[in-house]
Image (cartoon, rainbow, N blue to C red; front, side, top):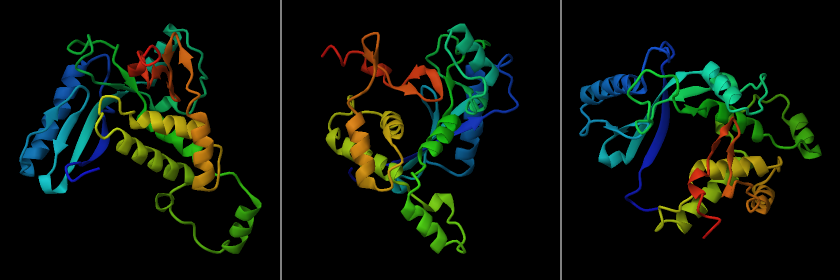
Length: 250
């Protein structure tokens, strides 16, 4: 929005060899922080990495206006399934996204300094896989003709294609940034915009129709126990809109 804004990259450091029964969130996070700061020192960064609630942040050169947030995590599908069972939440044991479930660090969590399996949960890769499935455009007669016309041409790599859904989300996020540029407190987080848009999208093959479909559904945010509820599609226990609890009463 202005020259002071910077770019950020969210990364997850998955500790595949760590056992959640043997490490505390604090020890896992400190070990990752130690390695990050060794990297920062080796490459002569101006600032040490800083510790946030869940992540470590590396700030690159000011001229680059770029920082990276790194979230320490441990694979924990078994713990996630157990948690769903304990909360009596219905789930599909064949759900393909569950295998990506993670236990993550959070220094505001009551069990942060002790060895305990009650870590906060997340599933960024599962969400990514869910989102990829929502990108699919409906097949039309035009698509089939196009396929025949280019049947001998090599496929374009996925990362060089931006779908109507992705473009629609870019527009919605840009609108959000302009509308809330002076109101950071009420600014909707990107994951809510992405989830609502991807859920509403019906495979339209152009940005205009995709936006019409998405916008027509944005007012239909479900409520539960008097609050808005935007459920994480790969974690039924997580409400992305949990900070909106007072919105309905205002």
